[in-house]
Image 1: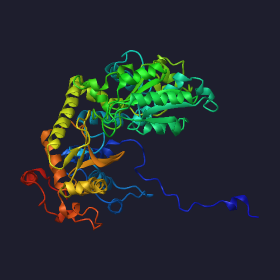
Image 2: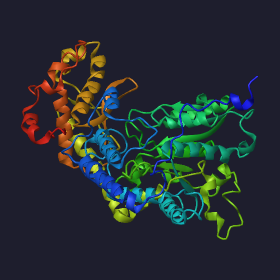
Image 3: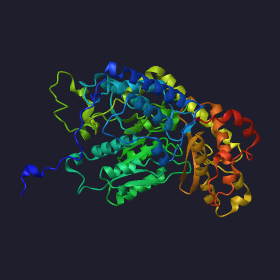
Image 4: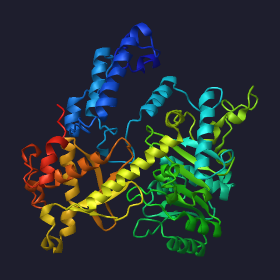
Length: 551
């Protein structure tokens, strides 16, 4: 038998000597030029050019093309600073520009200059916000901002509690966790095995995170009951109460209702006062997912959309959505002081010592599920300080004004059909019906919906390849694919709304590929299709509204 030492397997490579530039600290002589050049490139290409109407929303490449264009490999040897700067440029070039005025694709957009500086400042300091001793400024900053947000909701400013979360889904998860602890605190130590079945209620148009978080926390997807909505996408209180009664008849415990203020697709606001009455009657926790629509609370003109939110037990509100703070910036707010700590604390003695030389009530990290945590508050606090509450209000009012203008314009435009005649939020859902499908004969055919279902994906494909507009589409229940414009960038104006409408028309009037939408022909070369199907108004404005391609 060989000796044990002889059986050791050698590594498949020789250990290389350490590179000169391996230390994880900035050196002014070595890094000053690199950092300044990188920041200058980011400012020029991402901040200014990336938000310019004269540039593309995206320079689209397929996964195969992009993989061939970018060197994403990780090697033994490091790259030179010159090559790293080239990677900065390439990363910006081939990334989607959510700050572009014509990125109206998701519930986030814009590059707020004050939020950006706040984000950069936070990244430069690189704190972790769990104890006062390592994050004194940000601990106090969080308490100030969360208190002000509670006051805006209608909770007591100096009571209750709140935290910043890594996204609205996690904030909704905190709501479920707090509701469970409030209803059954013994489950923190005993677990849910053998316990009475507990049920969470929400609507069919609510965010999918409610069901996901119910699964994650051990309730099971069957115990996240999905209720019906009305024709405008709002939770139906009558159906909710019927579901609650059915749950009680089954011997289960109705624990919580998650209402929505600003649903993802239709932008619907659930009737919170009616839902509160049901929650009060059956002793359920009332949560409001206002991740999207919460910004309307800052506008006296639009606050009525969330009437009754002050009665809730907890609220999710994402400033990175309607208020356009940089990603990510999400909050969970509750009227119940101390509950977050009671539900989640583990009292780790290496972080949360009780014999520190300062008031340890400011060591707020134990009420979070996270340990290490970014200072997400800084970018939003900096925005709020720069603009004031009046500025945030003006921002919200501008969004709703643009949405109203867009809705009014397409309601009178041939080919556009609104899904909702009177949308509540800045989501505008509509179909674009190409000329080939507008006739009564085409509409009467049994395959009309199937053909219409294919229009939006093809139109979006063309606009993505041009880089001219990024707007999402989706089906909903029995409705075929429709476009959903979402507005939260207050730098847009009515001329931008006109551009978006006319760009949709340009894309939808392409007879060579829209007329034979079911023919299975190869996709037309977008560069060779003319605009002969466009209206005179579109042709007249085409030259001034179509932005030059970026090479």
